[in-house]
Length: 247
Image (cartoon, rainbow, N blue to C red):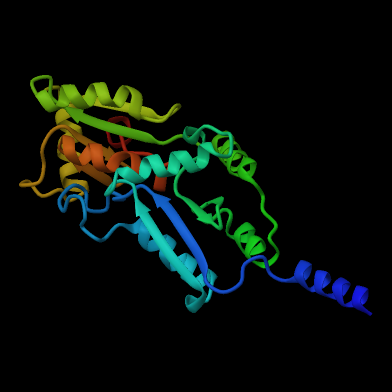
């Protein structure tokens, strides 16, 4: 009888959900998303990446069972090292794992929505896809995506433009098209006028250097540093209009 009871307890334990009670989800993300287009600056509280993942996870799990903590690496740089240490513990290079990433009971998942089904399976049964799935998801995405196009408006007489020109050489993702326009050329002036009108950029907010990515614009060195990479991360395949397409 005692052996039967032990066997039943083992069976019940094995079939029980892996996680009971409150689900603690810890997300690492880069924001701002760029929605403020440089006009509001860091901390405008309207970052769409964080808003979207918060809504998605609150719809995925009952609110009373979810404890969601978001670490915005743009707002608190100290969490970069926390994230890298956790990922490195799995024996992989943190640079190979794309953000945003969510940890649940120490297990990492991509937080872009592509692994939501895997998250539910893990919560329900304890089945984990492992760190390899994150790398595989990234590899499959990289193989199938069509790189985006970024337009850069600059002046050869602009000190900040020189700094951004150097920064772009290693900050633009591999395979992306970077189209540069000197605003002191006919082509540059044409693109400058087009973007100012087409994107409704207020004259008082326009400055060089300026990046246009899709319909988003980032004016000034600080805005580009803060927002370009995270906007590419959020929308990785946008194609910015260039002169040949409007002439």
